[in-house]
Image (cartoon, rainbow, N blue to C red; front, side, top):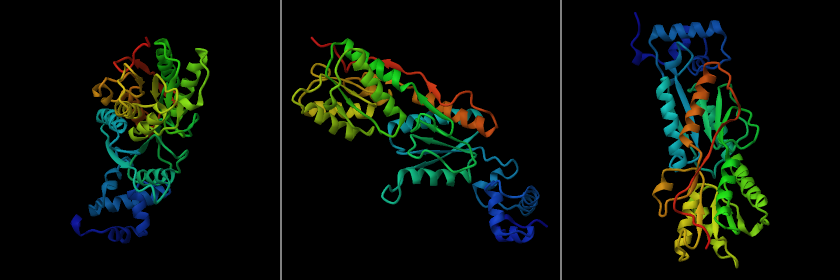
Length: 337
């Protein structure tokens, strides 16, 4: 007679199958280091005893969980929200579910160590993992991993990014076309390729226009509003302040708008401001922000589709996969008189 599920423990399963508790655990977590005959034997006992210990037991019959893990540095950031929207759209089409991990206490471990630990944890219950704006450069797992906005030009796993250089160059050509020659720049997280390419686009935009590079006009940011605010304060305090500021993302640009207001400046009459990302908030700030649309939801949608393809044994068509950017002109910039 089949025992009631509630009375069955993992030790009961191990005893009935003649294996250790750790072997049962590894079968439940779909580990690849269990011999096929042992795996089949343990699986048969689990089904016979009607044992379900956790979410992992859902995948016993197919070795697939139909579950994707997602790691984001800040779940409340507008960028992360857009990422989740794109991933949700993709997984809904393919019958997958999502489990989310976000940054914890950075005082206890480095961001890279935390990401590696989270990938390892998620790999035990999910079919694959998406890591957003990673700090780590590699992940020790046999499960598929896809990164969004990698921190290296040649990531060791499939990646999705935007044409960041082209987008930044378009901003600079637009601002210089408006007559601005002193353009301040607030960078992003320096370890990310997006920040590297956007800074290169800023520099090359000046070079193409024959405008000398002034190091005082470049501020090291981190893609946060508060740092954008402080960087803008420093730029506006220069003896010769910029007439325009290009922030490497919209959150930083929103910080610039706040700094301008506190300095008694009108945007765009006294200062032109441009961002990058085209998050929803960029439309609703005052004035509406000129920015670069990198289709965040499409980036994350493609990352999820790429990961699902990897889970199914498919090979990505290109790596990294680039999403085209587009300059969006709104009300935060004007031509110099």
